[in-house]
Length: 310
Image 1 (cartoon, one colour):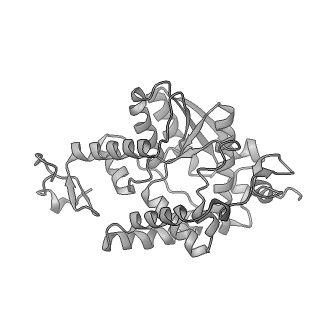
Image 2 (tube, one colour):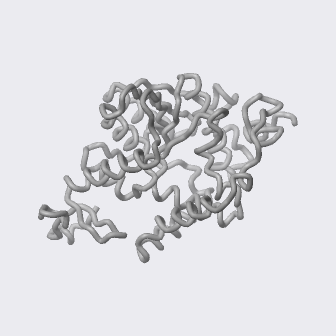
Image 3 (spheres, one colour):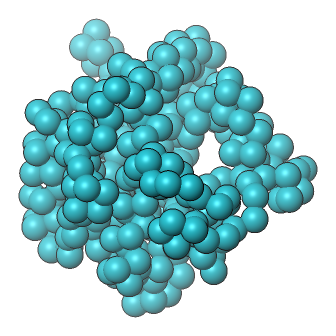
């Protein structure tokens, strides 16, 4: 939101002249409370429609951590339900088992689903993988985000499949998407640059959708504050180990000095994907010989992490 010394700045939406609460850096536009909320809702709806993310009769599993992005995602999807015939929502929260952090965010997720009347499923690492994340990470804390991400995706997919979901909605925002592009480039990970794991193989995996992919973190936080849904929550204690933290700081500075940097990164990625044959992406899908889940090799990443024999 705007700083106190900018309170006299007015909304530039015609014919509005209400006090502005946010400046969209790439366009230079100032928006008041009403037009900011409308902007977020319109961009969300346009993203869903343009990419045909939702079809009549879909049962959408919303990945709800309880944090700002997943909270905004569930609120926007729930508000749009009347426009989608036969579409239903369920919320899925993954309890990784992180001491001093997860209980509060899970509490926020529970409160939100009760308020909205949305069916809510909670699945834990302990029940699926035999231990909390804190236990599974001992001795390899530097790989915390990689390990957690792989296990969380499996837990979410398992819960969504058991609940009969046809799509999984993820709260990745513009910042997240741009960070992922840059991380893939820095790692030299061409397969994941050209093949979005969210698309998957429809016959093998539940498709994932990202309705917030063109909304920045600033826009989402401002939307939550203006609608009375913002809640200060603790940060994951493993964040400091992540490459993403360094990339986030780098991109935040670049976006401030050169507005549009994040969107340009995503557009560049999309252009690369359009000109790259799918065969150059991830390998063919087969079943893990240990757990039987679909994967791109003989042993899936989950089984490798859990140390199951190959």
